[in-house]
Image (cartoon, rainbow, N blue to C red; front, side):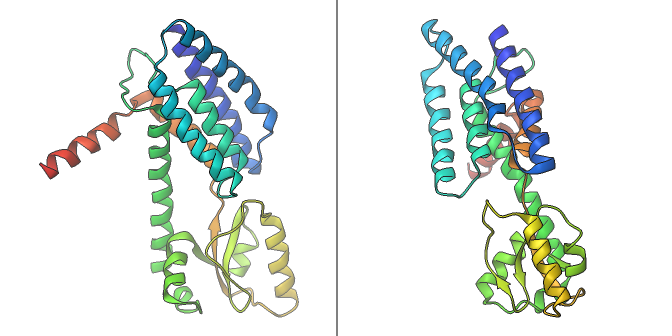
Length: 249
């Protein structure tokens, strides 16, 4: 059991520190992940030789981390997201045997589900913000399908407000830009400077509406998800699954 405490503590500290970097800078030093990965692999090796590790759990967790790694190489997610998923897979490949914790699903599955719920909350916030700003939505000159994507992925704000934000990326700028997503390598400061220059050149008015999306600090949200998991395990997920099964039956 003491190894489970060690696993959980190392992962929690690692994600907490990485999450602070992600929140403040959206960049995480690669070296930060090394101790967690080394400790995780060492514990997994010891537990495998001692026959106290479920190969099925480890394989499933590793497969999910592998999918995230493929997404990272394709540019769909950041490198830190990949390293975070690998750290979760090697340090918590199976539910830890903690006295208060109830766990059935691989922890990486539960953490990603908690992260997904938080992301859905951000989508709902965008939808509400757009519904409360019909003027901004009407000003978008784009096909209906693109408008729908913007409705759920970006929120309206005036140019003057955008210039005071951090980690927001424009998806729609009148007469200048219309796209469905931003690149993970983009610099938000560069976009603020571009729009500031457009205002100076008269291309944009400070009161013009733009639609911008927040660069979600994924590792920060995974750290919060882990803290929640270490308190309640996957009980909320199991309760929802139980409710769905009862409804279908």
